[in-house]
Every structure is written in C-alpha cells, then in structure tokens.
Length: 415
Image (tube, rainbow, N blue to C red; front, side):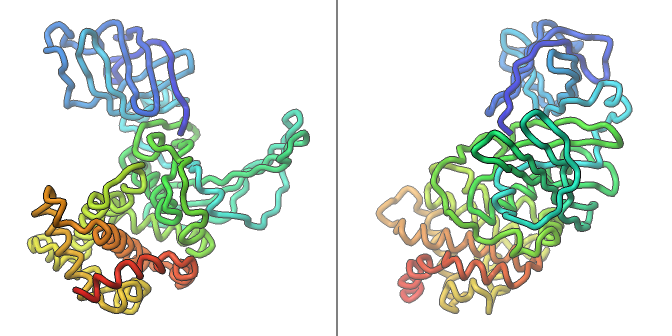
C-alpha cells in the first residue's frame, strides 16, 4: 500500500457526533496522525501533562476533502497541541453506514498483494465481458478458483486490461477475495490479510507488500489503509532469489491457500515471528537465530500443551524436529535430527550466555544453524498444513538446501 494522505476536514468522536472540530489527517509510510485545532474530548489538553499518550483507543469519523473517513484505534497524544496516533483508516464508508455498524465488523475483504500475480503465474482463462476506456479495454474481474476455509471462502480473481497504444499491450493482476460466514472485526481481518502476506513471504523469501485492502459488509465497501509491517515499511527493490521456493500451482492452487489460512489462524504469531527477519534489510545472524527458535518454541507449545509448563528449549525444538524424520529436513541434516537439535539449542544457549564475548562465537556456524532452524519451521508448517508432495519436491528441485547442507555438515560431524 503506497498511498499517502494529506487532507483537511471536520472530525468527531464516533460516540459524540455533535462535537465536530477542524483537523488535518496525515498518512505516510511510517506514521498516520490526526492534528486537530480544538479538543475532541472532555478533558482539555491544558490539563494533561505534555508528552502524554493515552492508553485508551477511540474511533474517530470525519468528512474531508477526500470524502468520508473512519479512523480506528486512535490514541490521543498531547504535546503543545492535541493530536491522535491513528491505527487504521477506512475510506469510502459513510458515517451513516458506520452508525449502523458500531463495532466495525465486516464480512468481505479484497486484498491486492505485490507478489501475488508473479507467484500465481499464467493460468488459462476465458474473458467475455469488457468495458471501453479510451485506448484501453478493461475486462471485468474473473473468478479463477474458490475454496472454503474455517471462517468462510477465499477466491482468486484475475483482472485483465488491453492497452492499444502501449509497448505492453496486455496487463493483468490477481486479487484474493475473502467472504466470511459472519461479520468480523478488524483484528480478525488483519489475521487473514497477514496470512496471505506471510504465505507469499514464505514461498518467495521476499517481503510482500499489501498494495490495497478493501473491506465491506452488505453493499457498503471502503478502502482500508494502515501502517503495519510489510504494508509499506520495506524497500522491496533489493536483490532477492529469482525463483520462489514453491508456486501457487505447487500448493494445489486455491485449496492450498485455504489450508494455509486455517493453519495461520492457529499458528499466526509463530509464523509472523519466523518470517519477520525477511522484512529487515540488515539483520545479525544471531537475531534471525533467536527469532526462529522463538517461533519453533511457540509452534511446539501450541502443538503440545504439556510443553507450556516445560521450559526446556531443547525439548521444545526436539518435539518439532522429531516429527520431520524421513522428510526433506531430515535429509538437510544428514539424517542426524537428534544431533542437529542438540547442537542447535546449545548454540542458542551459548549465545544467550556469552553474547558479548565475540571470541567465543563462530558466526558462520550461527548463520548456518540459524538458517536451518528457520527451515525447520518452514517444513513443519508446510507438513502440518497438509501441502502436497509437489511442494517438497519443488523445494528439493530448487536446490535451496544444497549449500546449507554443506555448511552444516562439518558442525554435525564434530557434534
């Protein structure tokens, strides 16, 4: 999502529509802020210490130069004037519609992601409907596939446009449409938005940007903007692997996405932790290591509740690693899962105890084992998700593990 906003208008608290005040809304890649001329709340800024940020989150609505806006999860800040830190912005839903939906619950979401079309690739389809737009023909979105998951249905759409006077005569892009069985709040919709984003990150080992997200209920629809990890904080132009780890076709198409959505609803926090390192331009090897180990611990505890009270990192890592005996991960560690798990946790503990003593740290070893812990999480998640064998065959075919296996081997032999 790359839009910026700089607009003025009148704003009010959702539960106090009679107190409308003038203000200016700013939305940039790293912040969203509402500056207002007068106080929206009963406690005046002069009675609040300068620098205070309210812990309470409120909902603000407004009519601006760019139309109706809903500002969700806003936190009041008092400096020399009053302003609000804005969590989410929803454009295009009127305040009248908002009044009928006080909990901001929606049963529909349309997501555009920058990596989706490349990842999906070419799929045969038939186009029948068109509308003329000057020198272009804009074809109506066409549903390619759909499948049920726990909360509803996810669909893949394709949108074609033919440009008559262009060096690129045909362009297309894909979108994911989520139709829910019942209305859900923004927190739940964030989970589904993140599920799609993190699947593409896992598949491509690249940051995935959410170009646009729309939410709706009934006939009302609005564009949803917020500054969250991966939406607009990452430079995606840096060099990356030219080929994905696995493709849309490899996972079984839309059924694979539906399976992943169900898995994410169970392991979302761990998946975010595991993939977070992909969104950081410069990352120390030990930081990726600790993030990946934390993700594995989270997965283990979620998979086996008896490990909640067992704080042994080694037992938690082994719980996950031992489930992958006979898989491509077993091959990665030369069929030495037990030795690998012991060594992986010992390195983590060594780092935790002697992190400031650089002479005791072999950073090449830390890098190799950190990457292997990351792939332990990847392979476990794909296995738990019930992905077809074609996914694991493609990972093998890509040769992703070849160099990593060579880097690990001497340390396993000396383990």
